[in-house]
Amino acid sequence: MTDAAHRLLWTIVALLLVAGGTVTLAASFGMLPGGDPSAALLSAGLLSRWRLATPWTTLAAAVTGALLALTGHQLLGWELRRPVSAVRGTLSHPGRRPGRTRLAADVLVHALERDLTGGPGVRRARVVLTGAPPRPDVWIRVDLTADTPAAGVREHVRAAVRRFATTAGCQPAHLDVTARIEPGRP
Image 1 (cartoon, rainbow, N blue to C red):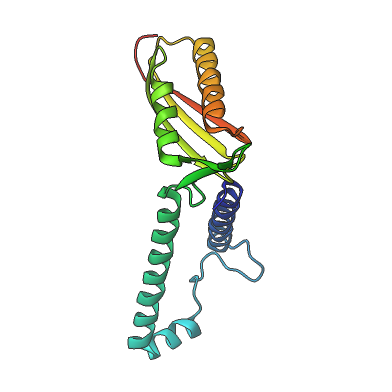
Image 2 (cartoon, rainbow, N blue to C red):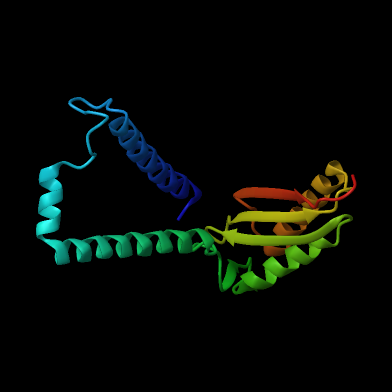
């Protein structure tokens, strides 16, 4: 899923939960048309039908709960998984003469991570390549020490990405850099 699809999905889930809570709150205060705040939320007819079909209603509630739990588990799994469109295998470029240059994507990722961690104050770096190989999207996260100057890190990341583009023979279509500063004395 793309980031936009994730945002849309979780926006819809949040709106459904807010709408359900709002309707329940309005019903409990008797703000719904024909509602009485002292009356039970479920009508007596609905409760008698529920009790009449006793073993099946309990089973239906259990199955509904299990399906909702599985759906939530699947959504959580999608959120925690690496991007599906991550570049795997090799990046292949035609040469000027007959032949092709092939570079393993994971080797390029590890090389860029190693290059980024060589900078002053960079503790860890994580890189993910997504998209099409001639113009991949590059997602970078660097963990910095508390005393690292931002300007120096910015220039170091730019230089590392330039070296990556020259080595891989492809210019990133999109570059997203996230810098996290570790807690400590500034």
